[in-house]
Length: 219
Ligand SMILES: *Cc1c(COP(=O)(O)O)cnc(C)c1O
Image 1 (cartoon, helix red, strand yellow):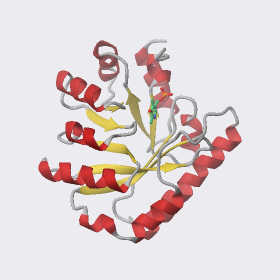
Image 2: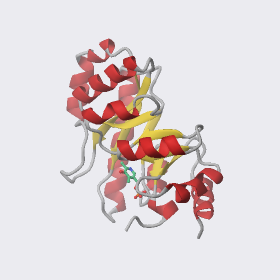
Image 3: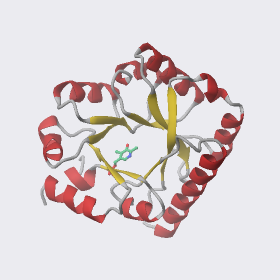
C-alpha cells in the first residue's frame, strides 16, 4: 500500500479525539513529503539534529514533536520551534527546557514520560517519583513550561492483555494527576505505536505515534 493509503486507513480507524503523530525519524524528506501531501501536519522525530535539518527544509506549518529520549545538551537545537516534547524523563531536563524556552521567549509544551513497561530499557519516571516531584511544587518556578500530559510505552510483547493492562494503568494515572495537579492544562495522553495504537486508543489514548505502519520498516 502507498503511504497515503496507509495514513488514510490509520486515520479512519482512530476514534474521534485521537491525534496521529506521523513518526518520520530516519525516513528522508522526499518520503515524508508524501505524508505532508496526504494532509499530515504533526511529525515526530527522535534525534534533534535530524529534526532541525528537516524543519529547515520543509513547509513551515508542520508541527514537530520530540518523541525519543532527549539529552539536555541537545535541547537548545529544537527549543526555537518544537511544538511538543513527549519524552521528559527527569527534573534536570525540565529545567533545561525551561531555560531554553525563556531564551526563545516561548512557552514549551511537554509530556512526562512514565515508565509502564516490564523491560528495564525504557526511560521515564516511575509513578512514585513523578508524584513526589509534583508534590515538591518545583514546577511553579518553571515559568515557560506547560505540562500537557503523559507519554508511555508498553512492553514489546504479543500478550495483548499485558499491553492493555499497562495502558489502562497509565490512563488511570493520567486521570488522577489531572484531577490533583493539572485540571487546566492536562489534555494529552500519548500512548500507542504501530503495533499497539488501536489497543491504546481503546484504553483512552489521545495521541498515537506511528511510523513503520505508515512508511514501512526502518530496516
Ligand atoms: C520510533 C518511535 C515510535 C514509532 O514506532 P513505530 O513502531 O515505527 O510506529 C513511537 N514512539 C517512540 C518514542 C519512538 O521512538
